[in-house]
Image 1 (tube, helix red, strand yellow):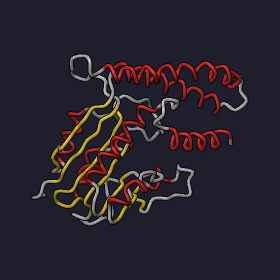
Image 2 (cartoon, helix red, strand yellow):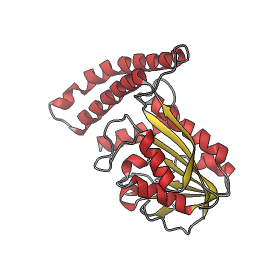
Image 3 (cartoon, one colour):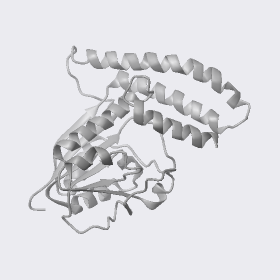
Length: 259
């Protein structure tokens, strides 16, 4: 019961204050918002949100499209404690739509939860109209989550390969985050997950430490977030080097007109 209440509080907190520096994962949420804003530039006609979950982006896209369709896997969808359900329940590897149906498809933080990312991207390419757009955001450095439905992490090389195999062309691929931001964000996530673990222990001996751990964690998270902002501001001062520690990838791909 406590865990369910905390989950609802966390969702509400993330929806309202997710991009503020008081949120432990504000940087990752900021990257997700960037994906949404990028997708808005291409949004038109019929939109398909693959792995839509509770469809938190629906309102953001409705002013730009003629129709919005959310699809999620039936097993995954059943895990969400929400009154909002996907429009369609289906496996992303076998979408129940004809070829060349949609103008734009979204996959926000989905690929890490599928067992065959190549097949999922190929299926997204199939249902897109010629010159249709696919927007992908996917974590690279991020802890295990939503187990046992966490399957993998993918480099830019892998993402480019999957996109090419799906008869799509890369319009843009961007690596978000840096080494220091990765380290600080990982510490924040560790602290949040450890508190969540303690809540799950109910009245065990370990759960008695939740209050002091939470009290210690809050200032650490706030300081880390300020440092994350500072690192971001200073990044433009130093020479640009290859990014070996991305937290997240943003991909924009376009279906070829002949596909």
